[in-house]
Amino acid sequence: MGIDADSKSKTAGSVYSVSYYRPAPGHREQLEKMLSETPSAPSDTTAGNVLMQHLEGAGWTFLSIARYNSWDDYATGEKNSVAQTSKPDSPWYRLRDHTDFHTDTLTDRIAP
Image 1: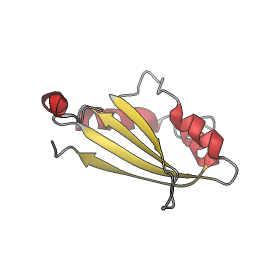
Image 2: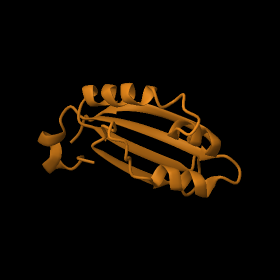
Image 3: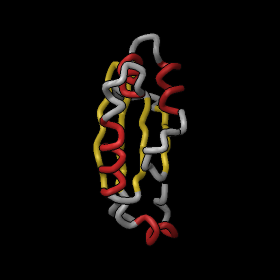
Image 4: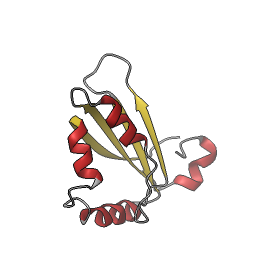
């Protein structure tokens, strides 16, 4: 993910999309499988992805972090995915089938 001190110069300007998910009842395995899939679309612009599982104490189950090399890469990825969102078999629709709650936020790297 480029967050160690040695990667600082290589990842300056990176953007991170942090997302939280709670599976729909009975859909935990399907959501985990979907979130664990390696992005395969040629239009994917992520430079790294990580998926974490929550153990206890909050209303979410999965946390994913996607790294983009720049704001331009992030914007390009979003632009590329717009056409896919209207297709019934798109990842967006599949995500909606398996998710009870989802939110995300964008972050910049500020340390180290």
